[in-house]
Length: 60
Image (cartoon, rainbow, N blue to C red; front, top):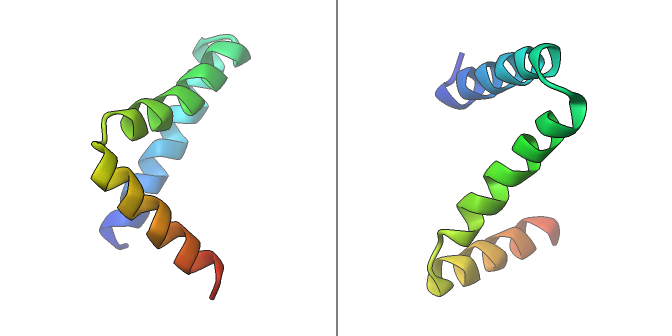
C-alpha cells in the first residue's frame, strides 16, 4: 500500500468511528471544517498555486 492509500484508509476509519460516537452533523462539521481550515492557513501565493494546479488537472 502506498503512503497516500494508508492515510486515506486511516481517514475512513476515523470517519466511521466518529459517525458511531458523534451525531451526524458534528461529523459533517469536522469533515468539512478540517479542509477549510487547512485552506485558510495557506498564504495567498500558495492558494493561487493550488487553484492553478486544480484547474490544470480539470482540463486534462
